Image 1 (cartoon, rainbow, N blue to C red):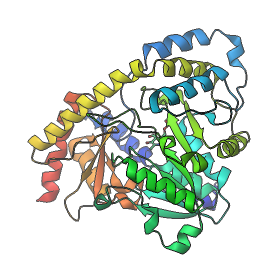
Image 2: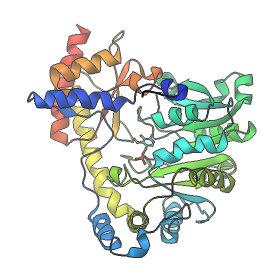
Image 3: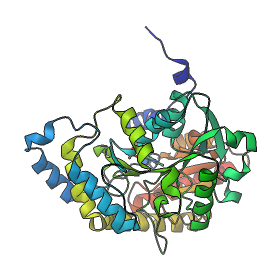
Length: 391
Ligand SMILES: Cc1ncc(COP(=O)(O)O)c(C=O)c1O
């Protein structure tokens, strides 16, 4: 029997799946494919994580249901990290919530705080969980185009007044996927002030806060005055520590909003595996030592990609943060057509900008998920294709 809901039918196909199918056909044909499409780097997890999990597996008390309360040691480690890293004090029980990766938290959050028909503002292009969560919550979706001339920032003040008055939630994500944009403190002050004044909840998605380069350090939104009134911030082990498959993250922020998310999740899941929460606690206690090699590798990869693109005649901006380069296409070139042709002709998988929303049309994304030498080779092949479409 085939039966799908209207909500599901209204969502686009999840993008990375299609690329995987073409890639596997090309690999079968013996093509040397370079995959820089998905945001899943080729790093091993920290040795400390592997050792801690191995030991935790033999503790049978960690094999029980975790429920939303989870492991006190994990909550305490999160609170200690927030204080050490951002100077933000949070109560580990009421202002923190363990997540099975930040994605589920982001999607479930909409169901926790938004009524059907209320407006949810979503960055376009943006991470698909925002759209999925909003659609399954029957929200009225306002796709906010991220434009280079606005530094890819969401300016709530540019929404029509009636629309803003119907808005109950906005997603913001800086350092940004896919544009690699960062937000300065003036912007964040304005964003929080706008949310407080208009009684809008702010879901601040911060999985790339540790992946920053040169002189830039990303803040927590909770450093901003007033943020605790309206904000929940989402964090992840995936990108900072090379632990995408471990499915661990956390939410932190306003106690009432955290409680709403926790109650919602109690109907959907029973929390992350306790042994993984224990591992997360130990990794967070050594966060700087664990993140440093990841940050160094991404910096080297970024420099290699930027240099290779320039050498091939297509200079790109140097991302200050994240693990992505967001590359403009020559005028009039459609991103899906470009990405398909690049994969078929040159064996390089990138993400078409429009795959993350129509606001991403005219761009494509390169993820720094392979080594510096492979990225140089990817850049050479990408530039071949850029020359073809430009001609
Ligand atoms: C902006 C953004 N938010 C959230 C996530 C989800 O991360 P996690 O692995 O913690 O679910 C990703 C993953 O790519 C992302 O790019």
